[in-house]
Image (cartoon, rainbow, N blue to C red; front, side, top):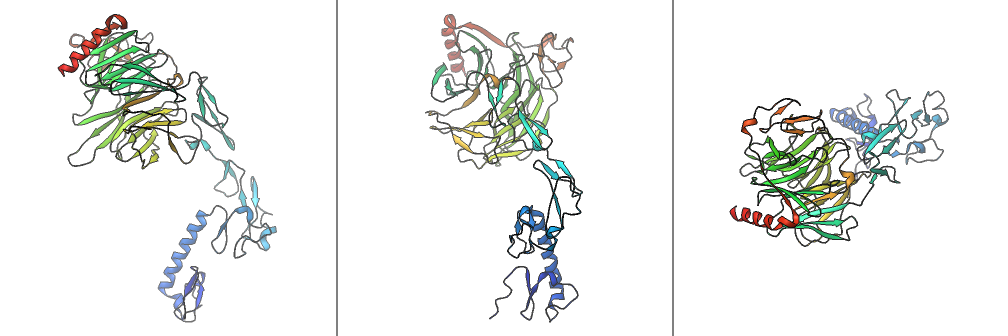
Length: 514
């Protein structure tokens, strides 16, 4: 009975003898029948050497002769750690004697090996040590990362945040966060400890399509595509301004620095309005076959981001993510492949990252503002996410299920992202939600102060921009060419106590009409 060679590092000769694969194709008949010098044997040797190279590359310690990998500091420690005993030998006491290592030298039976202190890596010459840039890892720090010689340091944006004891994440100062959400015709707020819930606004029969909050001014903006309105009101509902006769307005976003309001109309047009001046302009129009499903702005960078989805006949949807200045100028596609059905975006204005949720791919992903470094954060999610919101080091998301339908995932400071449900009991589908806390809206100067624009002034990536009524741009101080062709929006400015009844009547008639 011959069961063949029992070790993968040995070769079966034709005469049933076993020899080491290292003896193959060496112009010496080690088998005794010449089979170790055949073409087949030479091919086996080539594959064997290739496997050894892979093993050696993957071993960041000491590679024993039997291909076992042990920690480097276990070599030459006067104890047998390799099963074949090849981690000890006569060279152990001499191997580092003539090495010129910049940090330390580890003795091995194969000769000395230069090693580096923590925070450094060995240079190409094998003896010098170079600093590791830990800040290349985006997950180390929640906000800012500074590379130091042999180390790194995390810091926070400004006095709105304080570095936590973990020295990597930042906690927002000021009032605790609120989770603001809408279901059908109500807008509600839940406290940061998830114990207190209160009704902010209710208008029976009028479905809320989108909302945003100017946190420091205590103003809430919301749209109803059903009623064709955009409403701005203070949290006490003492004063309201609303625009009517809009075509399916959705996805409202506030630039809290310039006080411009942006929204998507008819699922393909991006509109900017200055409610104080009662002026609006369409600054971007998507292709007639596409739908804008998600939209966000970063007032500090002067940039806006949106997704465009197209449905091909009998095929799954495909989506791209685009970026432009807040004036609609300099449009570019930053993510152009791999996306299917993106339902929401979230921005990190400090690290300049854009997050998105793809319902068909069942993923939450992120990339830099320029579209580089695409990273899948959460994959194959059991409860398909619908909407997302970023706060501190966590990403919150919801789905269309009732019950415990809000989740949070820590996305910084850990290797493996873990998501858990938030203890908020809701009994209707959460259509829209956001995290509200003043530190989220980074304070800054209004770039449009002291800038004369003929129509609307917006922020841009390179400074203030002047937008005309037809969506074109002119330099500050110049006159628009469309002055006689402007179609001004319909505004109503109403106090709460005197005119609440007229709001209900107006919106009721609008809904009945549509």
